[in-house]
Length: 127
Image (cartoon, rainbow, N blue to C red):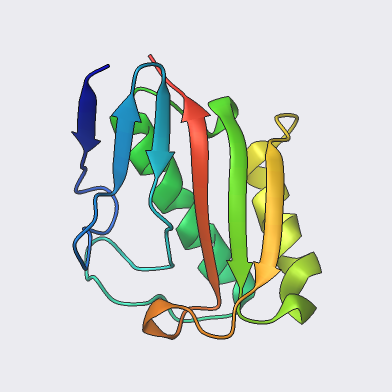
């Protein structure tokens, strides 16, 4: 199967030796997305809700570039700097997925890149 690197300027560029996503066959695997504003490359200000919103928008942009969408996500892995933020994170996360409820793992991470409070990666079906 051919391996395709996915890149879009509608989401933050990779800040290290990795790709925004890799598409193989009918599946796309995203890198973890933190709440960086793609226009500035800086961490968005605000609470866990604001940061989660930016993360979900970044993921949606990458998935769209791969011929997919949040509606086609089958698995996410979510990292929170503080699990006390879980309910507030979950409300924003859930609003983006609606009735599509992918499998999910959520863990507390001791530290996330750039001082972020949330990071999410996903696996999705694509065209």
